[in-house]
Image 1 (spheres, rainbow, N blue to C red):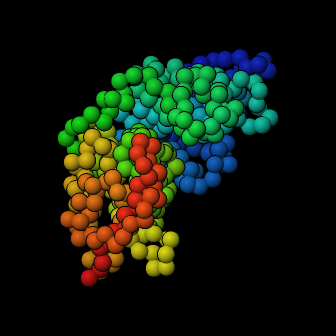
Image 2: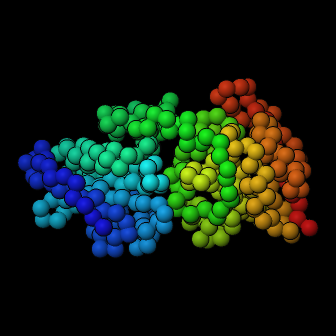
Image 3: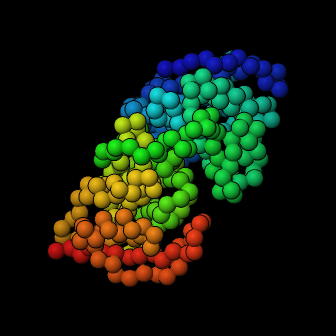
Length: 330
């Protein structure tokens, strides 16, 4: 499906049409993917999936700058979830020969106008802190978090207080609709600092590229389970996963879990949903502040093997200990 959003004149005097392509859109696959070939895998795999099949209850939009002869000269992509969407802005690209014509600014303006018109709540992106793109995004209302390069355009000022308001949850196998909600969860500042050993995630971070990696690793069998907590509104306040760690010979399993502070009471429900192999050792890692996680692991048969004092930094307290736990195989 495609929509013409704007007809604009570039600084070069050329006419450009801004087209919004909503996946699935097989007819656009061989026009857009070659234009974004530099992204490589796993991004091309993910976008190819979107073009061919769509992303289930999630949406992927491609905002294209197109000349009168059909040539694509600019792209911005968004992934979105929910009826009042939250989104991830990705793949901003203009070829070197087409730059300094105002292409990116026209695409960004059309994208932001479209997102506002659909009552969008928040749009996330990641870029280099204090870089030229960073300041372009600032001009469109995106605000960065400290020096991380993570930015957000917040159109609903109540979003950060309301989205993770305590609510009933159920456990599900993950699907594409969780991608952007997992980004919102990962950008939670408070809470456990040891968040995911498999992905090397500690404290505030994004989840944009990590989710693509996990989907590929699920397809290959390296990640065998990925469960999420979902509220009725579709927020994802927690996840747990079982994957093989390539850090050591034998690739032992590791159980990772992270839960938003407002949903600590659901930690055991989430961890209990992971089926543990009876005949193999499973490792788990936590920080010394994550009592609900440590309790849930203990109930599943994990014993604490030891702690590394003060290894993990915390933004609001003294350094935390890294706890190492193990559930031996039969």
